[in-house]
Image (cartoon, rainbow, N blue to C red; front, side, top):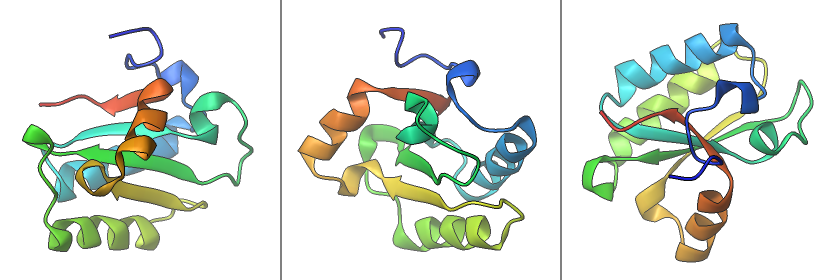
Length: 112
């Protein structure tokens, strides 16, 4: 794994408080799912109100059941996080988008 892909919280522009909330929601809704952050909060082009882009990678890279994905999205919307958190299923993304994410991301939660 190259240095752009390791768990690197210093590269993720997110407060520790918001990170804890997101990790808690992920643990409840999608235990065992690997989570990558990508986009402006990883590239350094974000501001306080920038959205957080997440891609969810289920074991075997299988699709995440829509009910679970919907529950996570609802929990994120209902949380006290003051910006939009976009959570996408890796298995449902086009290959060219996956390639773009692979180029520059931070592993927020590794595969368990």
